[in-house]
Amino acid sequence: MLHSAMSSGVCPVSRLKQTLYDKYEPVLKQALTASVEYLQGMEERPVRPDGAAVAGVEALRGPLPELPESPEVVLEELDRLGSPATVAKNSGRYFGFVNGGCLPAAMGAAWMVSAWDQNASFRVQSPTAAVLEETALEWTRELLGLPAGTGGALVTGATMANFSALAAARHHLYERLGWDVEASGLMGAPELRVVTGEEAHPAVTKALGLLGLGRTRVLRAPVDEQGRIRADALPPLDERTILCLQAGNVNTGAFDPAAEILPVARKAGAWVHVDGAFGLWAAASPRYRHLTEGFEQADSWATDGHKWPNSGYDCGIALVREAQALRAAMSIDAPYLVMDGRREPADYTPEFSRRARGVELWAALRQLGRQGMAELVERTSAHARRFAEALRAAGFEILNDVVINQVLVSFGSAEKTLETVARIQEDGTCWCGSTVWQGRTAMRISVSSWVTTAEDVECSVKAMIQAARKGGPRWGA
Ligand SMILES: Cc1ncc(COP(=O)(O)O)c(C=O)c1O
Image (cartoon, rainbow, N blue to C red):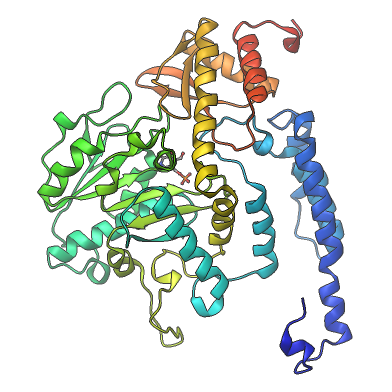
């Protein structure tokens, strides 16, 4: 679309300029064809890339080329050598880690974001990015059932979301102690106490380390067999304490008993932070909302767009009840940064320049709507239950209560389980990783993609059983 300044002849489009713009068209059409063929070919390839493909991508290394290359050749190389060595994450049979897929609206939006090439740091650099970020944050707050007025930031993932929210916590506690931690740092500062559960995700521990609060100084509260903090065994809390709770354990999917802990923690004056990288989205479903009860009383929350909402990589979300604390920890100022008093994204994030990732999150939530998000949580959790039921029926042990979309399976001894996981990965029908859960080696199944169908689940179950029984045609037995 031609804009008025151009069409009115203020800045007439020269032939040279038009030629530069024309360069986008063939390469974007090529990218469209390559992307569609890639996605449509997902069923015909193993989920893990094969050995030849992984060896092939090495050809993209080599010395920095001396001469320029045409965009079409660059794209052709990327598709020919890069595409085959990717993991088929959008296939619907990728159950590794907690990786969501990418909804069509989010993928299309990501393309638009690239065409726009907006810097999301300041409102003046992109009104569109600012409005969509604010809207996506507000929609997220609403879906997660968090208090009105909560503010936030969009970052790369839950690790940085935990970091950002915990920076707000650190600011708030030190402000109460009369210490300006942003100005004076931690040297000579009064001590804070940090409490997490024994099964807190390492992303939280890493964030605490980055904030100078220490990875190992943390008090680790005992947990039960699902990884939930035992409310009866919490260390004492006070107004110098940051308590980190978890909504959705990466292995079991379990939720800390927030409704029991929050009133106690609030009374003690502690700051309560919630790592809800994927689990908090259970609040979007009337069927699963009860699992998140009590977490809304916390002070800050970290979650991901790229997990359950399937907004594509990357998108982490930090939310803080008193957004002013996040702003105080993150804000940035210089004479050349002209602001008009409205919310400036860069005042809430660790980054300055930043991709407009709010656009993809907005697009994903716009496609899903309230009902779609609830249905996605319910459908993927139903798939997880089916995995557990089918594998249990085949004689294998399910180690966790399957409360949402995570399943832990033991195929016997640690060796047998690891061997089975390796066979499953090698087979390529689906992809799952391994873990050690409270001393037991297990396979993790995380159903987080909007693409996964009941058929994907059934054929994956079949491949898993075959791999565990070391037989079957796929093994050339
Ligand atoms: C509970 C929890 N917290 C934090 C993370 C880290 O998230 P990210 O990889 O988006 O930084 C994960 C990842 O699976 C997680 O499950």
